[in-house]
Image (spheres, rainbow, N blue to C red):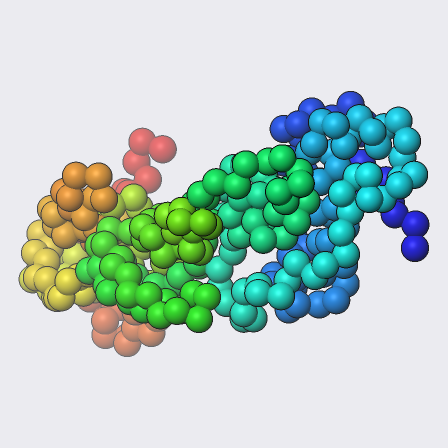
Length: 303
């Protein structure tokens, strides 16, 4: 089968810069790596094609020769047919490779690309840091509030990690030295945990503050009362003053999430919501009418 134009393989034009070529390669490599596609044969073939195209266009001399001669002689441009996936990731893991700098000859694909730059190629073989890994971790609202110790499985390894109190969706936790092993004595990469916090059924998070809508009765709103309310760290007592309006917010200082920056806690806000009974007995209607007569008010005055 004839080899495709490497520019078309990477989706770049012939005037593309080195940075544009590198960015295109990294984007396609992430999408088509077999370990990200259940080790399918089509992904393996596609990834090999992408790697070969990048080998040509990332090397100034090979790119210049290709621009002049095309695929006239495959060996001239360093093509190989070995399988680069003999020791890839296992299936079903919730992690991704974070491609480091340096291109071929570095990190996860070093064993593959070193074929192109052996002792006959004249390129110095030096120690290289292992690749960083990413792992998507979903935790509960309560776990984010208190912090947890968890165990994640990455590359057939069980790794104990600590999730500090105060993390939110989008937080990234770095676990040093838990990426892939380094090459030729290089240090290992790091593991990065991408945190997602599941929503809570009654609490809402706004930054480090927490909000709750609390139903109260007409009598509690008119006469005032002390009521219990759920809190993020146990039940709290809320004092409702007489004449409380629906939508009034009450603040519990320091009961919100701790800040990851300075450790100070946000606040916990409780918003009162007056609940009107759906069914009212006739006698109660008479009492309401009497109440209205004795306490005349126009809530729309001034509108």
